[in-house]
Length: 335
Ligand SMILES: Nc1nc2c(ncn2[C@@H]2O[C@H](COP(=O)(O)OP(=O)(O)OP(=O)(O)O)[C@@H](O)[C@H]2O)c(=O)[nH]1
Ligand SMILES: [Mg+2]
Image (cartoon, rainbow, N blue to C red; front, side, top):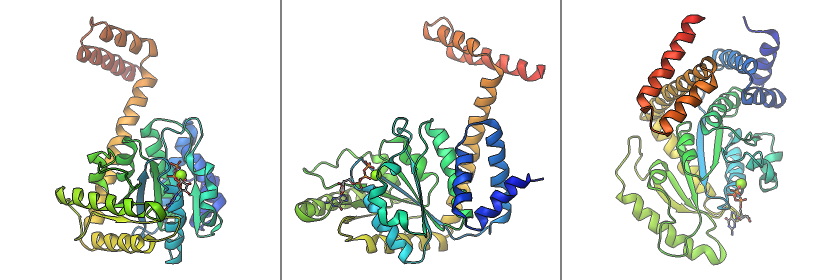
């Protein structure tokens, strides 16, 4: 049985009510056990009610601070809405413990989008582990899609780990770069290049236009050296230039996203990737929940004592883990 207030919330979301969506996101962001339980009930109700084969596109977007992500989302998002999409913009920002989210601060950069009724912008919740942030973001994607947003952009600041987490919950990954001064590849990690479908050298305007073109050529060359990946359509991954401020290149990027999405859907790769992502989510959830169950069952000082022993070399790590697990099993048997 679904509690009546959760059913009302679910109906509101399915009816596309923004207030219901916002409230539901607040619910999935909560760490309180009773909220967690209600959130799971809500998500299950929505999964049962929403059309299974919704054609939604999930786009990951990453780039270093100041590269122009917000400005780009404003331009690209407005373009996509013009093409008939309803767009939700979410942020993954595990570093935002202090500021409480990067999107809210620069909502002015997404002024047009923020006022567009076909757009929904949600700042990232503050703090938490990357795993916790990723869980909340996945659930928020599900809520947005149930509310009829068929395109979701998940934005993350380039801090390394978070790109991989975002790539694991999206279909297509865009990497935004600034024009480089020299001939170096800006120290962009190989792993991040490997998950990018489109590398966009932004700020290709004014004095920076020539540097942007050179940077694009460098990345295009680097991409050609990478081995082909499963699900790559001809011509992908690709490097191109854009100016989020002037709007140049934005239409082309929208075309390429649509082209790659269509190719991956018709080839079956899209569905296969979504299935793999769901299994990865299961594994991640299982690990997190086992750890929660462990932390709830084994007293903190027992863990601290074993940690201390491992630190000063008197307890081998594996033996310490075994001892703690024995305590966990005993606690489980006890009730
Ligand atoms: N010349 C030029 N400047 C741009 C372009 N896009 C963004 N900028 C400028 O770059 C600065 C940073 O832009 P944002 O969109 O806030 O960048 P961001 O990546 O969202 O930054 P954080 O949220 O702080 O990580 C602003 O002053 C923008 O006006 C562009 O295409 N060309
Ligand atoms: Mg920004």
